[in-house]
Picture 1 (tube, rainbow, N blue to C red):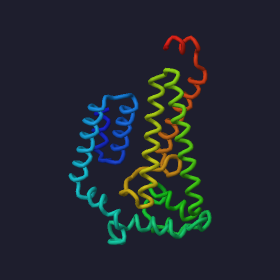
Picture 2 (cartoon, helix red, strand yellow; picture 1 turned 30 degrees about the vertical axis):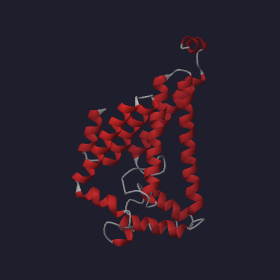
Picture 3 (cartoon, rainbow, N blue to C red; picture 1 turned 135 degrees about the vertical axis):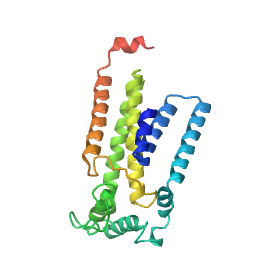
Picture 4 (spheres, one colour; picture 1 turned 90 degrees about the horizontal axis):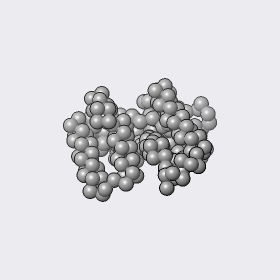
Length: 229
């Protein structure tokens, strides 16, 4: 795993690195790690992330620019300010499917990282509430499947499901947060919504694993379950 994280940092892709590392930390915590080891690991990771942010000036500038994108709306705040304008135009019910103005070369990466802003403009607050609600419903189903796997003593399957759930959770929170100006801009897609073949393929692969775990735990062998008590 350290090799994987190192290769991603070398790209460089801090967003994907943070997601993978936080997934590891989350699974480590859910598996019942000793508090001391968990705190040491968390402290080392936070220190490493802070170092990586300070090491590259553009990362630090991106980190602080989201607090006031209107201070430089044609510079570092351009992308976020246009995303906020998209949400503002959408109001409650949106401008209608295909009627977004911001996606017409005004909002950078409107089809990928900032797809939620375009949805907010076309479908309004109600539309993005449904999208985010369905995303969290999918997440709740993944967590439920992981819980059932652990209940039947399928430890690897259960923690795998929890790890996938954490990845989805982080992607949803970070993508929605950066679109709404609640978090710094980071190149993370919204699962099954943002454009991108690799993203869609990996999300589909993770869901296929969840479905396999679900099918396996629904066909639990009673003898195996009794032998684990």
